[in-house]
Image (cartoon, rainbow over all chains, first blue to last red; front, top):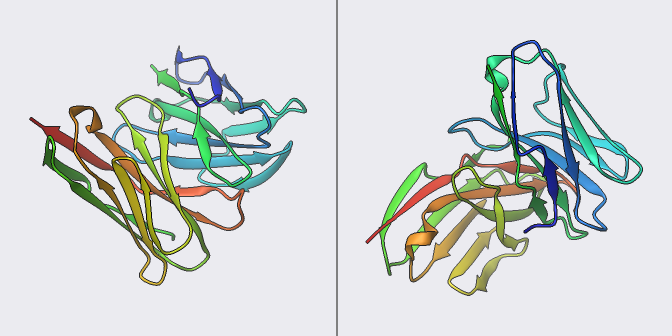
Length: 111
Length: 111
């Protein structure tokens, strides 16, 4: 158990819909990172927050957005969902030395 | 781009030793990480190298050559449970910088 929690574990929805994925970092970690992993694809970095502020952006679509709240939990919002958005979405938080620890992931299925 | 290259698949025999190589672009390098990922599960942290040389942790060791942009993960006394994908990731930037992941090496351990 990495100490990073994510909810829900599974999410099934329809095209065009909007969903919210939630992540709580390890106690004391200020950075939260979001990744997408499609079938047979590597981990694609989406976005990073540090202590409530956006720190870095990767290959995140305009239909996707995220935020980090004062209690340091983070939410990833995915809207106008398409079939190709079906993937595993991981959240990670990092220790002061920068090692990232991953949550169990949310498996999103868009039908 | 910052390409991280590692072999797609490898096969080894139970009890043997296997070496998984990773090459990366050196400009801006600030640390290399290895993760293990079983299918459908979260990546779990294995090792971290930021200086040249070998880091040993039980059956797993990781080596780094910064000048060559090269790392390897060495797995000894292979067990069936070591069948998984092994992800090489490089940090470019500060200690809280995001990681760029390779596509992973799928290792199959056979009896």
